Length: 588
Image 1 (tube, rainbow, N blue to C red):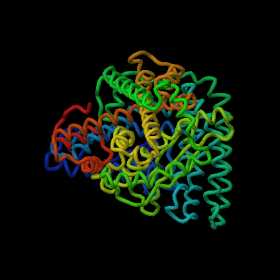
Image 2 (cartoon, rainbow, N blue to C red):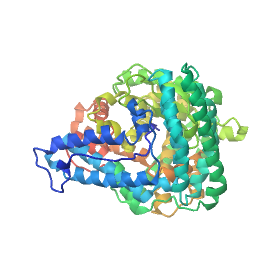
Image 3 (cartoon, rainbow, N blue to C red):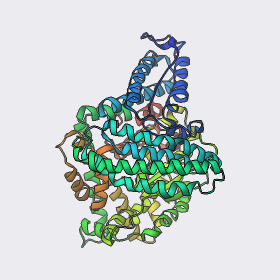
Image 4 (tube, helix red, strand yellow):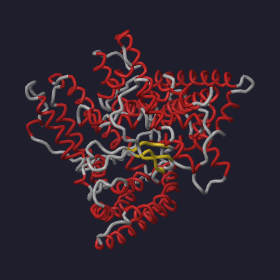
């Protein structure tokens, strides 16, 4: 999972009246107008009204600002987005060259996806965690990287903290009948967020020497802690009893979100069958490999044994770090992909506001960050308060096989390598608007691709361990297959409606996951409705690779294919297919 904190974008857009009419602009004027609108969008709108996104991207002129979470601002955002959509539609994309024409569609789809979220899905009325975790993320982006002197960052944090108590005033006004599971998740995280402001934030600024800023910080931080505690009590006593809303998108909204966000318009029943087919293929392969390890054991017994082969919780971070050198050496010696830098990512424990729904993630610096370019590999350790049984169940997700596939996914050649390529992405649109089927699809694709190319033989001490590593990769693939099926069935009812309890059971029985992981995954799926993008993107990339290979024949190079893919940035695979194949053939 790649994590970069981009808060819900609150946009107010104003551009020249020259492009406000409904007629298409002339071919001569279209490229200049599109470039102008794009620059206005990112420099004067996107970052201005989503200042946390500005900080995350490396635009530090926005560090002292905080998003306006009020309903009035949401409505201004909606009106501005509609206005901007009209201005963009006044440009004839046929008058643009191929690359900007693709960027045009990416940007237009992004606007429509935002409108769908604000007007139809309406998370700002449904998800209490978006407020508490949102403001926490806004402070975290200031403290996580030393992009400026500590006194400068402390003053920025103080200015943001001053505005945080008002966020919870707006939350109390905005939240209307949230889904029960959303309020439960928010309550589950609130103590960790309070602890974050009590301990982590002061620790991050402990070296500050600005006495005035430190004195003001003591006041603003105390006010934030009290606001969070009060919000938690309000959620428990007031909001939770009346949280009876429905998190489900419905088939029409789901299909629109998938089309806008990922440029995938495959009918949902066909899409579900694609997911089921991949699930069954991976289950069969799991059974085959398990039988090779020990023909006397069932796949379930092999899975149970695999679950016990994991590091101690306090050795987990080191276990990931131990993988980096071998991954880098293999990628280079086997000509997998160009690695643009020798700098390795930094391993750390997952920030508290992400722990309820995330096991591991890569948090890279933004594309405009120049002073602190570290990327953080976050790993969620088991809660020290858990008993031994629950801890062991959780650690089963970090067995000898899944540690390899997770490290490949997050670091080499997955998310981290893609981040290292971002300077070569062709436009700001491709740097800032992410298609998850590209970003997560690439990382998930790498898990299988690396073993297919022989990485398991390099890291395993014997043939049995090599097969266990393959089982771990397949278990991770089955996790993503289960997300695929659960997402569609739970949100749309296509293929049969699925309850939260049934989804958890599906992750256990069909996705081969331990119960605590199944619970986390199901919770995540209630709000991350499109988390089928892992398998979907992987399958799209695999089809693209095969289609390019057929066309190029003996001249095909895996390294060149991967490098060419990276150069296209974080665009939907449909866009990349058109560039690499020069046609509009189906993504799957």
